[in-house]
Image (cartoon, rainbow, N blue to C red; front, side, top):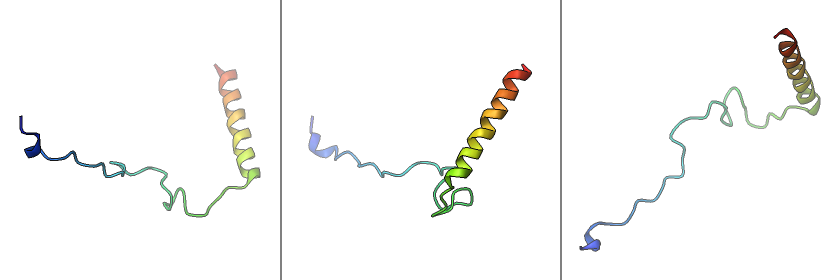
Length: 58
């Protein structure tokens, strides 16, 4: 077989085939917007309370 005529494999483009829902620079995740530690802790506590209330309800 003549492998010379088959050509080389194509290199990958190193880019996703889809757009991320929370990509950097979008409205949901703007550049340079870093939530404070207090906001993160408050969000985690709210999620834990919601999970606890859902478990108690069942």
